[in-house]
Image (spheres, rainbow, N blue to C red):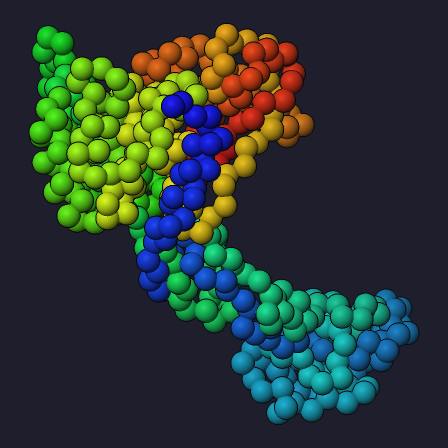
Amino acid sequence: MMISYKEACEIIFESAKGRKLEIETLPLNRISERICAQDVFAPIDIQPFDNSAMDGFAVYRDDLARATQDNPVTLEKSGVIAAGDLVSHTSFQRGSCVQIMTGAPMPSGADAVVPVELVKIGEDGIAFFSTPEIGAHIRHAGEDFKTGDVLLKVGDPLDAAYILPLATLGISSIEVFKKPRVAFLSTGKELVDDLSTSLGSGQIYNSNRPYALAFLNDLGVECFESLTIQDEPEDFKKHLSALVDQNPDMIISSGAVSAGAFDFVKSGLENLGAEILYHKVKIKPGKPNLLARLPNGTLYFGLPGNPVATAVGLRFFVDIAFRAMSGMEMEEPLHVKLEHPYSKKSELQMFLKGRLTCLEDGSFTVSILEGQDSFMVNPFLKMNAWVCVPDKITEIKDGEIVDVYPLYPRGGLM
């Protein structure tokens, strides 16, 4: 029975949640492009103590209340504090000032710093020509982070930007989900894997394989096996059995999943005792999508072989499973104005090749590109987004809002 895309998403998410990825601890320099597996809180205040933001002089602001350009106030210098000094070693009294360096701890009682370029250093003391604001040029304790602040949650995607604040807080390592172990199978005797060779009669290049490997790599997946299988059911069962013995988190195949004479994936899975969770989804391209669960718990995604249908399957089916396995939430679409009207006849959810454009005011619009057939990959040279049109909608007017997803789930907008 054919199900809706929403129903397929729910089945994928719930099934994948049951196969949570294992956790490992990594040093900060290795967390980029991984998924956080723990809630992380600030262990200390940052700044850990009040300190100077400038090279200058720490003062009690009221001592300079009457300082002007014409009538400067002169204070005696009572000490010097450098970054790393113990503040208790420096005395500070009303009517005096302390020379202080950037990052040095503020002496007790001082409530402002006057930059060195705004004073005149003389034999009789330090001359000040204006009244600073209370707190001027002071970095206060806890101003950046307070102890207990939430830094990361389970399921947060990580990148290099997180390293700086975590290291500032003295956090040397965090727990992340291990990379999913995945195998990818291409099916079809017409496929040629070596892209540098000439095509023979009836042959086509296997474009799904390099695209899938690159896509999975961007998701942080360890693709430990990539095979091309001829249209031989026994060959498929042999390779599938060997892969199952390696207990992968997921197996993905392209092709042989429809209802033709050489579409052997569904029957091959059933012969190995797999549970078919769904077969056929109300979408275009990619209607004959399949999800199964093998006896050892490995999830199996059978994607149609047309290149764009495979790309849609990876983006809108496989990625959901990885999110669920690593504690992430379902992805939410962007809501963008369509640049032109659009209509469709079928009651299928459409995944359309689109191009986002950023306008001068910072807003986005999207257009649906020419060449929407599932075999046509020319639009991939221009597209940067997928436009999703629900099954029940047949007409969209110029300027109406549509759901849009970035071309790649971790790739950002443009």
